Length: 189
Image (tube, rainbow, N blue to C red; front, side):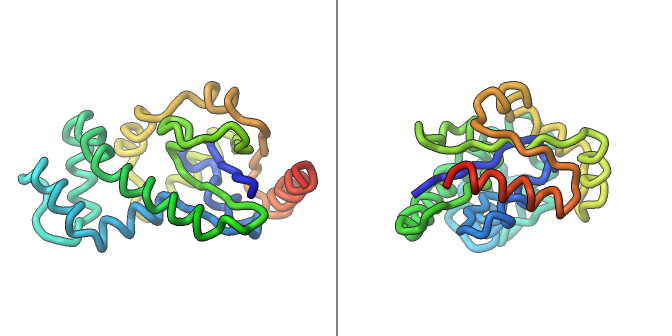
């Protein structure tokens, strides 16, 4: 099985590209959202650490954002609670798809959390900052301060790119995105 991991800046198009490959995708953002909605044990661990921020299960996105924005260390504390759960879900996903030719790992902190293996193909999604900002502002829950906090726990783009095997330039045109994905699939076949 070939593991392809997509890395890049918040809003660069990692999730969009991950779905274009046509192989099973582990999307960490969706897994985290599901844990927040369904995992009471996780909720109570977070509530115990931050009793003044969280009212009742399930965890509410606004309360989570308020907690993260209040103190730079809060994100690290929450991450220490949530990341082991995400890692476990990722391991289950990998076992479930062990017979697939390729799997796609769409995990924002893939490199930062040392999830990469020696043979992984790491693809850096390179996008223009102007286009990224335009697209981020279109998101329903766009919060500039939150994005700034999230970027603080991420490696620099230069470092991510240096650790990547390949680069896809995202100009936010579907035709070009598909061409980039097909070129990579041909290259690794």
